[in-house]
Amino acid sequence: MFFENKKKYVLDRKTEESLKVFFPVEGGHEEVNGITLYGLWKGLCLDEPKIPEIKQLGETDCSSSRLWGYDPDKGTDWNIWLWDIWIKDWDFNDSTWVETLKSFFVLLEEQGALVSWSALDSVHSDPPGLFDPASMSCGVHAAYSKDTGFIVKSHIGKNLEVLTDDEMLLYKKVLDDNLPLIKKEEYEALFK
Image (cartoon, rainbow, N blue to C red; front, top):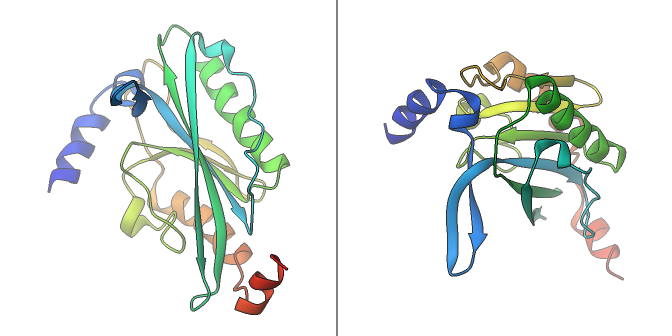
C-alpha cells in the first residue's frame, strides 16, 4: 500500500518535482533533486563506463556504484552500473532533458550495455525481475536498448509518466534474449 500511495503522489506531480535521489553527503545521505541512471552489462564490467558531459543540465554532481549478480545455480552473470545525479537547478528545457538522457544511454550501449534506464528511487529489481511489470511497473520513466530504441516518459514541465507494462516487456525481452545461462566452469575460467 505504501508504494502505491507513493506512486500516486509522485505521478501527480511535474517531472522536476518528482525525481529525487539519495545522494552521499558528509555524514550520510540526503534526498535531493536528481535522477538515477542505470546500465546493465552481460558478464564482467569492472571498470566504470565513461559517461557523457551533462553540463547542459546546469550544476550537477554525480555518484556511481556497481551491482553484480553471479549465481552458478541459476547461471546468471551480469553487472549493473548506476549513477545518481544531483540536479541542483531544473533550469533547462524539455528537449535538452530528452537529448541528455538519450546521449547518456547511447554512450552506455556503445560500451556494451544491453539496456539502460532511469527509474524512480526505490524502483529496482535484479534480473530476471528487471523490467518485469510485476516488480517494476510503476517507476521506469526512460529506457533504451539498441534493439528496442529509446522511450522517454518524463518531460520537463509535465506530470511524470512511466513506461507502460507493454513497453517494459519490450526491454525485458532484450534481457531474456541476451542474458544466457553461464556455466560455473566458464565463469571460474575467467579468473584463471
